[in-house]
Image 1 (cartoon, rainbow, N blue to C red):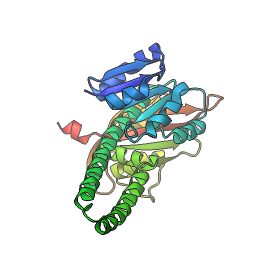
Image 2: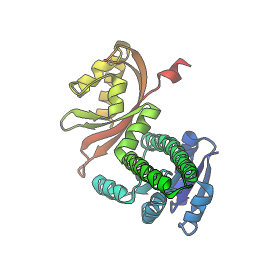
Image 3: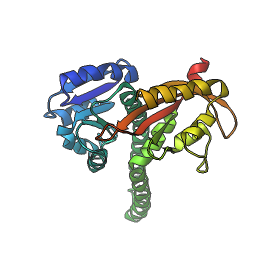
Image 4: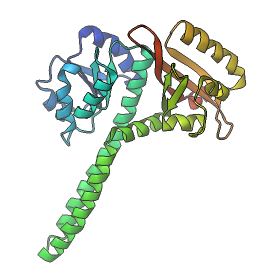
Amino acid sequence: MNKILVIGLSSSLLERLNPFLHDVFGSAMVVSMDRPLDGVEWVMAEDPDLILLSEEWIDFCRSVKNDAASGHIPVAFFAQGNPIDALRRKALEVHADAFIVIPFDEAYIVSQLHVLQALAHFYRHHVVQQDELTALIKQQNDEFEQTQEMMQTLMEDLQHEVDSHVEMVSTLQKSEYFFKESQRAAHIGSYAFDFLSGQWESSEVLDEIFGIDASFHRSVEGWLSLIYSEDQVRMNRYWNEEIMEKHQPFRASYRIVRASDQAIRWVLGLGTLQFDQHGTLISMLGTIQDITDRKEI
Protein backbone atom coordinates (compact mmCIF):
# COMPACT_ATOMS: atom_id res chain seq x y z
CA MET A 1 0.00 0.00 0.00
CA ASN A 2 1.27 3.48 -0.88
CA LYS A 3 1.99 5.83 2.03
CA ILE A 4 1.55 9.58 1.76
CA LEU A 5 2.63 12.04 4.49
CA VAL A 6 0.72 15.36 4.56
CA ILE A 7 1.98 18.26 6.70
CA GLY A 8 0.25 21.54 7.43
CA LEU A 9 -2.55 21.34 4.83
CA SER A 10 -6.00 22.54 5.90
CA SER A 11 -8.75 19.98 6.36
CA SER A 12 -10.75 21.53 3.51
CA LEU A 13 -7.78 21.35 1.12
CA LEU A 14 -7.02 17.77 2.18
CA GLU A 15 -10.66 16.80 1.69
CA ARG A 16 -10.55 18.14 -1.88
CA LEU A 17 -7.17 16.53 -2.52
CA ASN A 18 -8.00 13.03 -1.22
CA PRO A 19 -10.01 11.79 -4.26
CA PHE A 20 -7.13 12.70 -6.61
CA LEU A 21 -4.58 10.99 -4.36
CA HIS A 22 -6.58 7.77 -4.38
CA ASP A 23 -7.19 7.98 -8.14
CA VAL A 24 -3.45 8.21 -8.84
CA PHE A 25 -1.94 6.19 -5.96
CA GLY A 26 -4.73 3.66 -5.42
CA SER A 27 -5.61 2.61 -1.87
CA ALA A 28 -3.04 4.93 -0.31
CA MET A 29 -2.63 5.42 3.45
CA VAL A 30 -2.68 9.20 4.04
CA VAL A 31 -1.18 10.40 7.34
CA SER A 32 -1.83 14.07 8.14
CA MET A 33 0.15 16.20 10.62
CA ASP A 34 -0.33 19.83 11.64
CA ARG A 35 3.41 20.33 11.99
CA PRO A 36 6.52 18.18 11.42
CA LEU A 37 7.36 17.65 15.13
CA ASP A 38 7.85 13.92 14.63
CA GLY A 39 7.96 14.10 10.89
CA VAL A 40 11.63 13.23 10.40
CA GLU A 41 11.40 10.20 12.69
CA TRP A 42 8.21 9.04 10.98
CA VAL A 43 9.82 9.43 7.55
CA MET A 44 12.80 7.31 8.61
CA ALA A 45 10.57 4.58 10.06
CA GLU A 46 7.81 4.48 7.45
CA ASP A 47 9.59 5.49 4.22
CA PRO A 48 6.49 7.07 2.56
CA ASP A 49 6.04 7.20 -1.21
CA LEU A 50 5.21 10.93 -1.23
CA ILE A 51 5.34 13.96 1.08
CA LEU A 52 2.97 16.90 0.59
CA LEU A 53 3.31 20.00 2.74
CA SER A 54 2.22 23.60 3.01
CA GLU A 55 4.57 26.42 2.10
CA GLU A 56 4.80 27.24 5.83
CA TRP A 57 6.79 24.05 6.46
CA ILE A 58 8.93 24.17 3.32
CA ASP A 59 12.17 23.99 5.33
CA PHE A 60 11.17 20.45 6.32
CA CYS A 61 11.64 19.57 2.65
CA ARG A 62 15.29 20.58 2.90
CA SER A 63 15.75 18.30 5.95
CA VAL A 64 14.25 15.33 4.13
CA LYS A 65 16.13 15.88 0.88
CA ASN A 66 19.49 16.44 2.57
CA ASP A 67 19.29 13.13 4.44
CA ALA A 68 20.66 10.16 2.51
CA ALA A 69 18.06 7.85 4.08
CA SER A 70 15.07 9.91 2.92
CA GLY A 71 16.37 11.98 0.00
CA HIS A 72 14.76 9.64 -2.53
CA ILE A 73 11.21 10.49 -1.39
CA PRO A 74 9.40 12.97 -3.71
CA VAL A 75 8.34 16.16 -1.89
CA ALA A 76 5.92 18.80 -3.19
CA PHE A 77 4.60 21.93 -1.49
CA PHE A 78 1.35 23.85 -1.92
CA ALA A 79 1.50 27.64 -2.28
CA GLN A 80 -0.66 30.54 -3.28
CA GLY A 81 -0.24 34.25 -3.92
CA ASN A 82 3.39 34.12 -5.12
CA PRO A 83 4.68 34.55 -8.69
CA ILE A 84 5.61 31.33 -10.49
CA ASP A 85 9.26 32.39 -10.83
CA ALA A 86 9.54 32.98 -7.09
CA LEU A 87 8.02 29.57 -6.33
CA ARG A 88 10.37 27.89 -8.81
CA ARG A 89 13.40 29.48 -7.10
CA LYS A 90 12.12 28.43 -3.70
CA ALA A 91 11.62 24.85 -4.90
CA LEU A 92 15.20 24.72 -6.19
CA GLU A 93 16.56 26.12 -2.90
CA VAL A 94 14.98 23.38 -0.77
CA HIS A 95 15.35 20.65 -3.44
CA ALA A 96 11.58 20.16 -3.75
CA ASP A 97 10.46 17.99 -6.65
CA ALA A 98 7.38 20.09 -7.44
CA PHE A 99 5.16 22.90 -6.25
CA ILE A 100 1.38 23.08 -6.64
CA VAL A 101 -0.33 26.43 -7.00
CA ILE A 102 -3.58 26.99 -5.07
CA PRO A 103 -6.31 27.14 -6.29
CA PHE A 104 -5.92 24.21 -8.68
CA ASP A 105 -8.23 22.40 -11.09
CA GLU A 106 -8.58 18.68 -11.78
CA ALA A 107 -6.37 18.59 -14.87
CA TYR A 108 -3.54 20.43 -13.14
CA ILE A 109 -3.47 18.40 -9.90
CA VAL A 110 -3.86 15.05 -11.70
CA SER A 111 -0.96 15.79 -14.05
CA GLN A 112 1.25 16.88 -11.12
CA LEU A 113 0.42 13.77 -9.08
CA HIS A 114 1.16 11.49 -12.05
CA VAL A 115 4.59 13.09 -12.42
CA LEU A 116 5.26 12.66 -8.68
CA GLN A 117 4.18 9.01 -8.90
CA ALA A 118 6.63 8.42 -11.75
CA LEU A 119 9.35 10.21 -9.77
CA ALA A 120 8.76 7.94 -6.76
CA HIS A 121 9.27 4.88 -8.93
CA PHE A 122 12.36 6.37 -10.55
CA TYR A 123 13.94 7.43 -7.23
CA ARG A 124 13.44 4.01 -5.63
CA HIS A 125 15.09 2.31 -8.60
CA HIS A 126 18.24 4.37 -8.05
CA VAL A 127 18.17 3.82 -4.28
CA VAL A 128 18.37 0.07 -4.98
CA GLN A 129 21.33 0.66 -7.28
CA GLN A 130 23.07 2.76 -4.63
CA ASP A 131 22.50 0.04 -1.98
CA GLU A 132 23.98 -2.56 -4.30
CA LEU A 133 27.01 -0.35 -4.87
CA THR A 134 27.50 0.11 -1.11
CA ALA A 135 27.31 -3.65 -0.54
CA LEU A 136 29.85 -4.23 -3.31
CA ILE A 137 32.31 -1.76 -1.78
CA LYS A 138 32.03 -3.42 1.66
CA GLN A 139 32.63 -6.85 0.16
CA GLN A 140 35.69 -5.62 -1.70
CA ASN A 141 37.07 -3.97 1.45
CA ASP A 142 36.65 -7.20 3.45
CA GLU A 143 38.41 -9.28 0.82
CA PHE A 144 41.45 -7.04 0.46
CA GLU A 145 42.15 -5.93 4.03
CA GLN A 146 44.77 -8.74 4.45
CA THR A 147 47.71 -6.50 3.63
CA GLN A 148 48.16 -2.75 3.87
CA GLU A 149 49.62 -2.51 0.40
CA MET A 150 46.72 -4.33 -1.21
CA MET A 151 44.25 -2.31 0.89
CA GLN A 152 45.84 0.97 -0.18
CA THR A 153 45.64 -0.02 -3.82
CA LEU A 154 42.06 -1.11 -3.41
CA MET A 155 41.04 2.06 -1.57
CA GLU A 156 42.46 4.19 -4.34
CA ASP A 157 40.48 2.20 -6.92
CA LEU A 158 37.36 2.33 -4.80
CA GLN A 159 37.69 6.05 -4.16
CA HIS A 160 37.85 6.63 -7.88
CA GLU A 161 34.78 4.43 -8.35
CA VAL A 162 32.88 6.15 -5.54
CA ASP A 163 33.73 9.61 -6.88
CA SER A 164 32.44 8.57 -10.30
CA HIS A 165 29.20 7.29 -8.83
CA VAL A 166 28.74 10.34 -6.60
CA GLU A 167 29.12 12.55 -9.66
CA MET A 168 26.59 10.41 -11.52
CA VAL A 169 24.07 10.57 -8.65
CA SER A 170 24.53 14.32 -8.38
CA THR A 171 23.74 14.68 -12.07
CA LEU A 172 20.68 12.46 -11.71
CA GLN A 173 19.38 14.67 -8.91
CA LYS A 174 19.12 17.68 -11.18
CA SER A 175 15.44 18.45 -11.54
CA GLU A 176 15.47 18.68 -15.33
CA TYR A 177 16.84 15.16 -15.72
CA PHE A 178 14.33 13.68 -13.29
CA PHE A 179 11.50 15.53 -14.99
CA LYS A 180 12.44 14.12 -18.41
CA GLU A 181 12.80 10.60 -17.07
CA SER A 182 9.51 10.70 -15.15
CA GLN A 183 7.67 12.00 -18.21
CA ARG A 184 9.18 9.32 -20.39
CA ALA A 185 8.22 6.58 -17.90
CA ALA A 186 4.60 7.77 -17.86
CA HIS A 187 4.47 8.59 -21.61
CA ILE A 188 3.61 12.17 -20.64
CA GLY A 189 4.99 15.22 -22.40
CA SER A 190 4.48 18.83 -21.34
CA TYR A 191 3.92 22.07 -23.20
CA ALA A 192 3.50 25.81 -22.68
CA PHE A 193 1.34 27.78 -25.13
CA ASP A 194 1.78 31.57 -25.41
CA PHE A 195 -1.47 33.18 -26.58
CA LEU A 196 0.30 36.47 -27.29
CA SER A 197 2.74 34.97 -29.81
CA GLY A 198 0.53 32.04 -30.86
CA GLN A 199 3.46 29.66 -30.36
CA TRP A 200 4.02 26.71 -28.00
CA GLU A 201 7.06 25.08 -26.50
CA SER A 202 7.29 21.34 -25.91
CA SER A 203 9.30 18.95 -23.77
CA GLU A 204 11.57 16.31 -25.24
CA VAL A 205 9.04 13.58 -24.44
CA LEU A 206 6.20 15.48 -26.13
CA ASP A 207 8.35 15.79 -29.26
CA GLU A 208 8.74 11.99 -29.18
CA ILE A 209 4.97 11.50 -28.79
CA PHE A 210 4.25 13.82 -31.74
CA GLY A 211 7.26 12.58 -33.74
CA ILE A 212 8.50 16.13 -34.38
CA ASP A 213 11.86 17.87 -34.25
CA ALA A 214 13.10 21.42 -33.70
CA SER A 215 12.09 22.50 -37.22
CA PHE A 216 8.37 21.82 -36.63
CA HIS A 217 6.18 24.96 -36.62
CA ARG A 218 4.73 25.01 -33.09
CA SER A 219 1.49 26.94 -33.61
CA VAL A 220 -2.23 26.12 -33.39
CA GLU A 221 -2.15 25.32 -37.08
CA GLY A 222 0.85 23.06 -36.59
CA TRP A 223 -0.92 21.22 -33.76
CA LEU A 224 -4.06 20.79 -35.88
CA SER A 225 -1.97 19.38 -38.74
CA LEU A 226 -0.88 16.53 -36.45
CA ILE A 227 -4.46 15.55 -35.59
CA TYR A 228 -6.03 12.59 -37.40
CA SER A 229 -8.31 13.81 -40.20
CA GLU A 230 -11.51 12.42 -38.64
CA ASP A 231 -10.82 14.33 -35.40
CA GLN A 232 -9.66 17.65 -36.86
CA VAL A 233 -13.06 19.34 -37.15
CA ARG A 234 -14.03 18.29 -33.61
CA MET A 235 -10.77 19.50 -32.07
CA ASN A 236 -10.77 22.76 -34.04
CA ARG A 237 -14.29 23.46 -32.73
CA TYR A 238 -13.22 22.44 -29.22
CA TRP A 239 -10.29 24.86 -29.31
CA ASN A 240 -12.36 27.80 -30.55
CA GLU A 241 -15.41 27.27 -28.33
CA GLU A 242 -14.10 25.78 -25.08
CA ILE A 243 -10.67 27.42 -24.89
CA MET A 244 -10.82 30.71 -26.81
CA GLU A 245 -14.46 31.62 -26.05
CA LYS A 246 -15.38 29.96 -22.73
CA HIS A 247 -11.86 29.88 -21.24
CA GLN A 248 -12.32 26.35 -19.96
CA PRO A 249 -9.40 24.10 -18.94
CA PHE A 250 -8.26 21.83 -21.76
CA ARG A 251 -9.27 18.19 -21.34
CA ALA A 252 -9.80 16.07 -24.45
CA SER A 253 -8.83 12.75 -25.99
CA TYR A 254 -8.10 12.64 -29.71
CA ARG A 255 -6.02 10.86 -32.32
CA ILE A 256 -2.84 12.13 -33.92
CA VAL A 257 -0.76 10.97 -36.86
CA ARG A 258 2.80 10.83 -35.53
CA ALA A 259 4.91 12.85 -37.93
CA SER A 260 7.98 10.64 -37.78
CA ASP A 261 6.33 7.38 -38.91
CA GLN A 262 2.67 8.24 -39.70
CA ALA A 263 1.46 5.95 -36.87
CA ILE A 264 -2.01 6.75 -35.53
CA ARG A 265 -1.86 7.29 -31.75
CA TRP A 266 -4.44 8.20 -29.09
CA VAL A 267 -3.50 11.03 -26.75
CA LEU A 268 -5.07 12.72 -23.72
CA GLY A 269 -4.48 16.46 -23.53
CA LEU A 270 -4.77 18.45 -20.30
CA GLY A 271 -4.17 22.17 -19.87
CA THR A 272 -4.57 24.96 -17.32
CA LEU A 273 -5.16 28.53 -18.48
CA GLN A 274 -3.20 31.47 -17.08
CA PHE A 275 -4.49 35.07 -17.01
CA ASP A 276 -2.79 38.40 -16.29
CA GLN A 277 -3.95 40.91 -13.66
CA HIS A 278 -6.48 42.35 -16.11
CA GLY A 279 -8.07 38.97 -16.83
CA THR A 280 -6.48 38.62 -20.25
CA LEU A 281 -5.68 35.06 -21.33
CA ILE A 282 -1.91 34.84 -21.72
CA SER A 283 -0.83 31.21 -21.58
CA MET A 284 -1.79 27.56 -21.13
CA LEU A 285 0.38 25.02 -19.33
CA GLY A 286 -0.38 21.34 -19.62
CA THR A 287 0.50 17.79 -20.50
CA ILE A 288 -0.21 15.36 -23.32
CA GLN A 289 -0.12 11.62 -22.60
CA ASP A 290 0.05 8.76 -25.11
CA ILE A 291 -2.91 6.54 -24.11
CA THR A 292 -2.89 4.26 -27.15
CA ASP A 293 -2.31 1.12 -25.07
CA ARG A 294 -5.24 2.01 -22.83
CA LYS A 295 -7.53 2.53 -25.84
CA GLU A 296 -6.53 -0.80 -27.41
CA ILE A 297 -7.34 -2.88 -24.31
